Image (cartoon, rainbow, N blue to C red; front, side):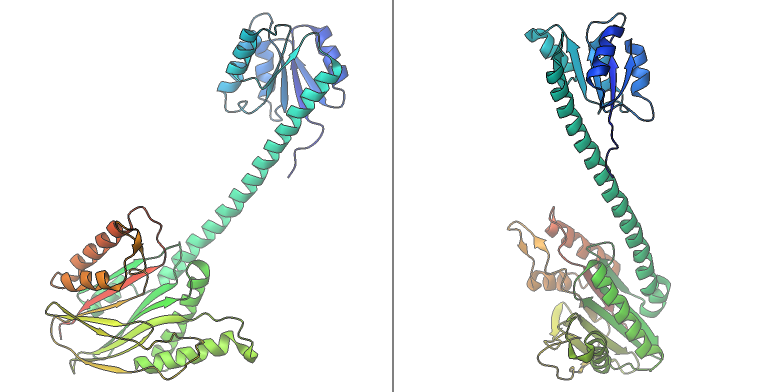
Length: 394
């Protein structure tokens, strides 16, 4: 990780006697030499570039100012510090030298102790910069590896969500506004059809990012197992069993080490009976009929550890044609924004749902998306966002 010693110094001077004196004074370092500007530019671009260049100003052909300007124009040599060697110590010469990119001046004839101190100071600073660059590169490599893994995890997570072709066939007119805060999400949704019934799930797992995504994928797998293997379709029974499994899995031997859980709303729509059954864990269901919003509240407890763990409530709902059903996580209403840069809260969210319910569901999704984006403005998204909408057509 660190710059190897001894560090490399390029001495540029058209006097061999000066070069020999400098090499002798800097014998602790790996010194190479060039007697012209063109030769110096070639040596500076070697695979192992010099850590410092001592550059004479007055030389035949290219002078030191011209060499320094060429070094600073080239990305390969831009970061190599240059100390000018010169008998010219007037203000104009110093200003010109610093303007073309020099970091220091050493006067001729040089004093050996002064030379050593100035060179050492610049090399220490260069080593620090090089090591910082190596650390930064290492961090960037780790970040790239983690990010690549996260994007692959995103593909896996998206593959576990219901496919659009399936939802188009089962739901007819619907939308899913799904906007993870990070690459992967703690929110998830499920759609399942059995006989003449449709089951919809919208869930918000504790946290977001990787912890939330792990929780969401485990919860999705458990719910799918209940539906497909155990043939369990009653919302409150699904929530009750899911809570039992989560608590039993995460808190073996009563250690209570992991308190994560999820909020969820589940509805089963029976088209033959024009009715639905709903259960919610810290999550409501909104039904809009003829422009009026009706809220069915979920139980005020999560699917997970909670002081009160009563059975989840089953709500029976009679449905009418063109009823609009909405399930959501709390991310939409919790977003900061607006003129006062505050939380949106539930009232404006409900108003958006109710006022747009006459539109086709795809148009409602566009409207909800725009409202969220306008509200958020330049703020960071604070949580995963999920809103599902479904128009019941009997």
